[in-house]
Length: 417
Image (cartoon, rainbow, N blue to C red; front, side):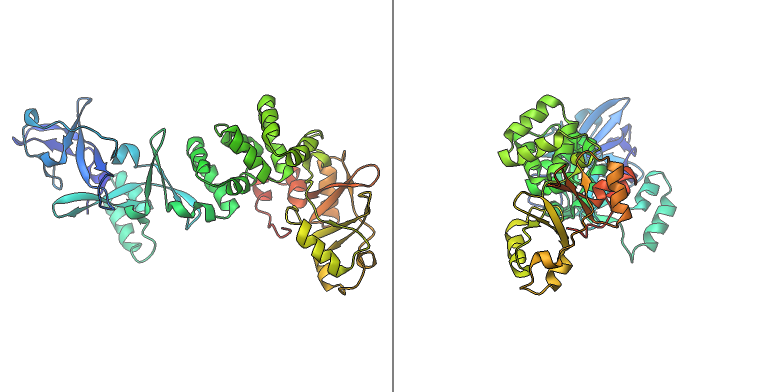
C-alpha cells in the first residue's frame, strides 16, 4: 500500500508524457458510506500554480510518475465541496489524542489502500519509521518497520479516527468517546501538549465536572488561557464544580472585571466561599486553604460520626482527617478515618480524638504552612483564626507548592481523597 509521503513531490505527466507539475496533496471525501474516505482528486503544482485534478483523470498512481489520462489542456475542473479535506494540509502533522496511552501523538504519515481500482485512506501512521520515511531514509524505515511488526506498529486505522473541522485546520482524536474517561491528570497532560485552540476546543466537548477536574491539574495561568474563549455561563459552572481554593486561584488570574462577572453568575454559597479566599494574600494560609472539610461535634459516638460524615462530607477536600469542633466552630480535636473505623461504635468522639492539634493561622505564610506539613508529616493542616475557630484546611500538595516544582507536586499521590 502506498504512503502519502512517498507520493509527495512526485512528477505528474499528462497523456502525451509531458511533465505538468508535481504532487502537492490529495483530496479525500467524507460524504460516502465507506468508513475509509476515498481519494477523489490530486493537487498538482507547477511554477507556484495549483491545479486540482479529479481522480477520474488519473491513469496511474504507482510508478516513476503520476500519469494523467488526458492532456493538461483537456483536464476537467474539480470543485472542492464541504465534505472534502486534504490529506497533507488537513491531516499530516496534526495531533491525535491517544486515549489508550493517555498521550498526544502526531500524524507522521498516511497509508492508502487500493480496492477495486479506487484508492482509500486506510491508516494513520504515528510511528518513528514514518519520520525516517519522510526524511528519505526509506531502507532504514522499512527495516525498523519489519522489526516492529510483531510489536506496536504505530499504525491507527482511519476507522478509529474522527476528523473535526476547526480553525485552523482540523484536529483528530482517537477514539472520541473515551476522552471523558481519562484520569484528570492524564487529561491535563494531553491538554498541555495540545495547542491553545485545540485544547480549548477539546474542553468544549467535555462535561463541566470533567473540565473542572482537568483544570485543577494545571497551573492557574494556563487555566486562565483555556477559559479565555469560553462563555461566562460555562466558566461559572466550571468554577462551581472546582474546589474553592482552585477556583479562587483561577479567578485571580483573570481580569478583575471578568472575575467579578463570573462571581456574580455563580451560586451564592460557592461564590461566597471564593470571595472570602480572594481577600487573603495569595501566598498565605488563608489564600491557599480549602473551605470544604469534614467536621463532627465531640459528643457524637463513633457510629453517629460515621453517619454524619456520610451525609455531610461529600464535598470535603480531604476526608482522611476529621476535625472536631464545638457549637462555635472552635477546633477542639482531630482524628483519622482509621481511628474512627477502629473505635468502638459506642465510644464517644471526645474519648478517642487527638486534642493536641497542629494548626496554622490565616495570615501565616505558605512557607510556614509547608514547614508544619513537613515537620509533622501531615496530609493536611487546619487553618484557624485568632479565636481558634476552624476556617479551612491546606492539603500537603498546596502547602508544598513553593518548595517543590509544581510539575512534581501535581504527581504527588492523592491518597488523602
